[in-house]
Amino acid sequence: MVLELTRRDARRLAVRGQLLTADRPGDALEVVRRLGLVQMDLTAYVAPNADLVLWSRLGGGYSPEDLDDLLESRALVEVEGFLRPAEDVALFLAGMAAWPGVPPRAPWRDEIAAWVEANHACREDVLTRLRSEGPLPARDIPDTCAVPWRSSGWTNRKNVQRMLDMMEGRGEVAVSSRENRERVWDLAGRVYPDVEAVPLEQAEAERDRRRLAALGIARARVTFPPGEPNHVGAAGVEAVVEGVRGRWRVDPALLDAPFRGRTALLSPLDRLVFDRRRTAEVFGFDYQLEMYKPAAKRRWGYFALPVLHGDRLVGKVDACTDRDREVLRVDAVHWDEDPTGAMREGVARELRSLARVLGVDPVGALP
Image 1 (cartoon, helix red, strand yellow):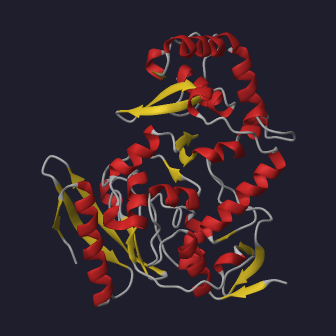
Image 2: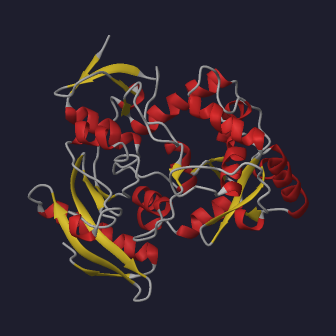
Image 3: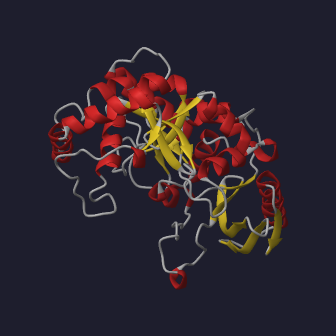
């Protein structure tokens, strides 16, 4: 049986899964446990992504210190650029043990494995130094690689950093903390909890299930960037969405839940909008992160915040936190449709809430 959904049904599944209804979760740890992850991106034009994601779910009761406490206590750990509940490490250990992946695998994975093997002595040097000296940033670890890392981008010849990334994928090292945005590394056994590995096939199926519970609706298989996938395999049940091509997977537990919407401002990296194709298909929302565009070519701003109102994405807020002046400067609100009074009031209320959480004053083009 294939479920037939309207676009409104699909939007509400996505909003419910991402905890963006009027029924807010209790605290930051609950948010991360139910979302499964929060991307650890430290661009702070408005605020770091993790703080924006947690605030948009919790509201004015959230404080960035809450996240600091969870990281310090290791209730949350960073795994390959995402903050995850510490207990979820059990779902990654089998994959780490199978690094660089179970055959058949892409040729580039074998090339990376060959580079690590060619620099076996460097990998052993890293482990020895961390074992004896404790947590260290990459810059404090000597480069003893015999074969340099080569890439066409910014990682070219960043041998130690790339070795640490590969060793993280192997489950040998982990991010212990961040100092001035820089990752500090330690042996994985000192960072991750002592949990039993879930067998690989079972772990992948459970990760698909949890991912669908957080996304609400997703494709079974899509092309995705490195990091957390946007697809969910065989999890959930099959569905079609009116006016949208192809088949979807949906979480049946979210289908009949009541829906009470609210207004929320989202990080550009928020999982509700991160899959731009899904955002266009389900929400009819046109959005790009424009921080990499020349200023003259930006339509909405350097780090514009998508505006959710109920089950619709209705605009973008061009804002910036000026720490020197201690203000949240709102340069513009770009509406995708004629705003109602409730939309304007909701955006203004959220901007004032965000400013309070950041300890600054809101100024500029508040609705």
